[in-house]
Length: 162
Image (cartoon, rainbow, N blue to C red; front, side, top):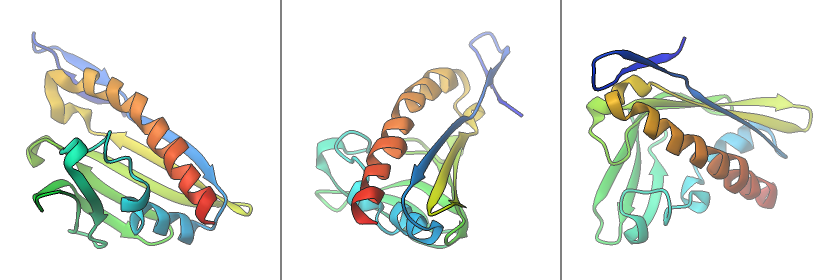
């Protein structure tokens, strides 16, 4: 099922989820830990953050109801989302609203599945309807960003750590 957003005339616009897969050379448990526990080590904060060059860290509060939070050089915190599913070694899901109000949150779910000696990491970013008329443009931006963040940067971190 695809999200629907409204354009300026009030018509519904279908906005499909973004789905990205990557294969990393480690167990599902390690891939989950690298994605969650180590997010501050591999996430490209200078490019993808609320405070850009002033960003100093990003971290998960690893539990349902916890947050994914960025902290800047002055200690100001920016909540990127709230954890809705936390299954170590299997799945993490959260609302997603960096630089937006929580009432405009999308959803990001990441699953970790054994694939031989590797792990298939699958990210699904959905809920674009929360952005209304901005949905298609925002989706295009993330469609360019997620392959770099997950498929290149996170994957390289896993390869270098495993």
